[in-house]
Length: 284
Length: 333
Image 1 (cartoon, each protein chain N blue to C red):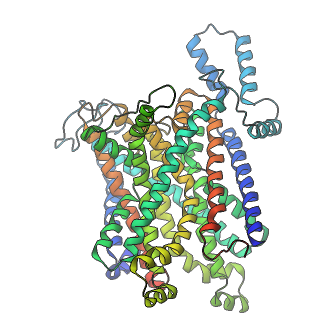
Image 2 (image 1 turned 135 degrees about the vertical axis):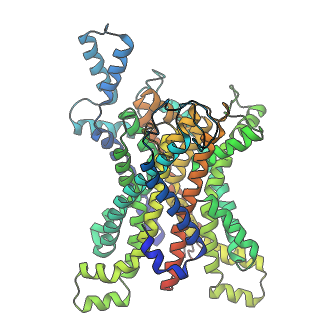
Image 3 (image 1 turned 60 degrees about the vertical axis):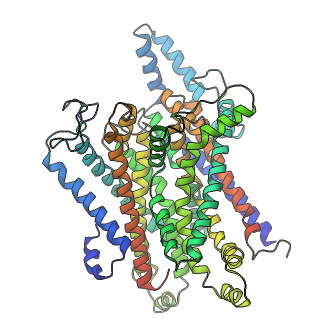
């Protein structure tokens, strides 16, 4: 998603961004392309012999359900990333439009938006998802989880964007544009957006982290749709079958390592990009 | 007068947040394409075979509607729901019938509160101290190493940290039990010891998960603050590094960190739920998980409302004591 920017700034990439982008690129392309090379549904049980050790045919062995751990993991990374990106697109649209409009329109509109922002920042999203999961009794579809995460995820980013637009609207170049007769829409699009844009990318990546993390947490405690392979459901099944005690440490260690690497990659990308854009604009 | 205005505004905000949060938890499940009463009845029918008569089913349906507050139109339901929440009356628990939900929650609350308050304070103090040192001495090489610890710890989700802590301390080193066993009976010295011993791993998880962000944020703040003119002036006056770091840099750099703590309370609570479930720690999170598994809706509703109230109240308290930490605000001045 960032390849074109990568090329433009290639000579100036900082260490964090380089490591982060490498990890994210490998995991993203790998999990998106590899599924085309298998015809087997990784979630289907009893496809292979149970509890096979790692071999050429099964890179990470098979688990107690007769699934190939490597392929399950590939699909898990893909599904988790797709969920993360979907949620993040929704969150970025809502957060940017509400944050910018609140900062610029002000008055009662701003107060109402701020109250809702503070509310959604305060309410922990996991209990809400647990209650909804219980009401629909394990039929929580992936889309419902994504929708709830959007509803509860926008406030953080919106808060930052609002405070950015509050300080920006007092800057001289904005006043200049206003006195030249530009409308609110034109000012936001031409004068403000270039400043907010850098944060939007950082916020976008952080929201992917938030979404994958929350869905996985819900799955690990068994309250998401655990039939769909995600980074959480694979750990749910491994815990359920006591992977370590039955001598299958790879079943649980592989997803743990993958999650840590993916999250580290995403975080390094977002903070590296943040440093880069701050450096470029001369503001921290 | 400014301070009084601030306090009043903060209280108004507090009740608005509670009201909106409680309203959302009322309406959201009702938008879902599923009916808890039908779910429950089909469960009972599956258990009783075909022996349940239509009248008995209807009677059960009415009773459940009464119990869940699903009688009458949406507005009646909503007002009676608000009235019950205001009285902390969440009805009886389904699993532990007829024990009231509020009693179960009040048993679980001290566990979560004790764990969360201790670990959040520790994580904040340790994280900010490390970040302060790393930021103040940011030219030294070891300061970079301290930051790397923060970078690696911060993005790791709670449940992963919990599993890694279990793998290392319970499986590999076998220092701690896999799941805790708490002695029953009244408080005694041995019971206190067993609680501390059994809470150690969940607490370790929460502290590890909490301090990564504080290290990173405090380091950035300290780097920026130590270049400020008043710190440079203090240096020229001949103060020691230590005095400048704690009394000059930290006093100001800690303020955004208190705000950050207030904003992340909801997130910390999410982490507590995951940690409690993974360690079978008997707090609110574990209660919620069990209630979700048993379809105990009264207990679920009680816990989510208690959660919202707890988090909002913690945020309120932190915001109200904030002026005490701000060196620029003089009370009564």
